[in-house]
Length: 409
Image (cartoon, rainbow, N blue to C red; front, top):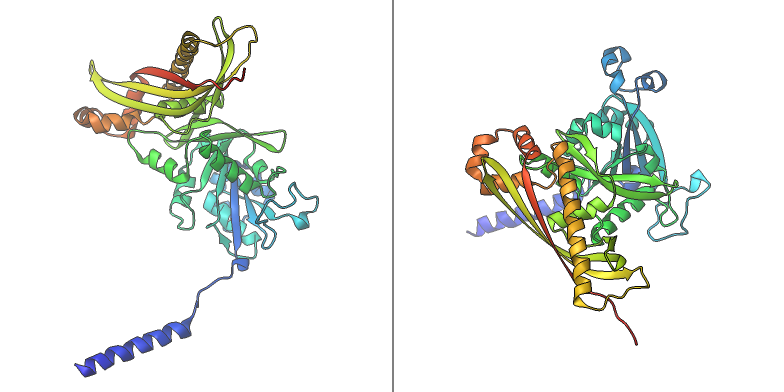
């Protein structure tokens, strides 16, 4: 027994010595890595193969791919220059003092472009700090199969990365540097995360996009953004997807709030301006939302009832000639908002039904609660998308205005 104990002690001592002597044999200093903060993907066109250096193949081997070339723009952090605090703000006139280095390459696929990028930078590329991926409308309409394959299998890519669609050149967002933030990617990231906190946008990271795309009864969507006046970034709405291709977009930012109301996503962050008979124009802000969805089979087809409850507050009354003094006055405002919200939700549903993109996930309710119908009629995602296009949906909205402000006499 004593000999066994001594053997164990000796073994543990040798193990400790080996650990101490080995150290971090495969460590890499952070300054020796190319930290990619953001990526932008645009179409490059077939002429790009004649002008750019493509390092990983002979052009005669990939001539048939030239028409589908992409241009990848990477925003790489410069060690020691990325500010930890607010800094002085604004963009610098000198490239030497810029906290990021923007590099553009072309390729036939994303992985091909990433390999070409590696040929132009000295340090190994590192995607652990990648937070923003921006794609142009043309790339989104062409399809995201290549993007999903590359980034989904890459262990360095965080599932909390944001994937965005823009109506301009995606590379332009790698150059935007508003006064509030010197690093464009960090500004876009902060804008998105604060929008979620304020109830201006639902959480839609890469993980959500991939999960919704994998469900048989739901389609994914992505933030749809625009650049205003060179330095302002506007969340313009949603980009709808089906079969990994963008099939449509919302027409205004307020439809984000409409979707969040239909799904009961909190907090409520949107304020609406509308006229009320005998009262004039008023502004009402949603503070809290609840939503209940029920599905049933009606005449051999799926039907959904969506009940939405909104608690809001009266923000402003624009007419000086009328007063809101009674419960009846508040009731008129609530009824008018109920009517307009119901109409807006129905319009958004019809918009998605036209392109067969179920971003509301109603198919998942049918799959969960009407299992026999689902098993008989749905064999693939395409089957549900066709059913969703002709699905009858009834929306009922109830608004309760709790706060109307204070008055000092």
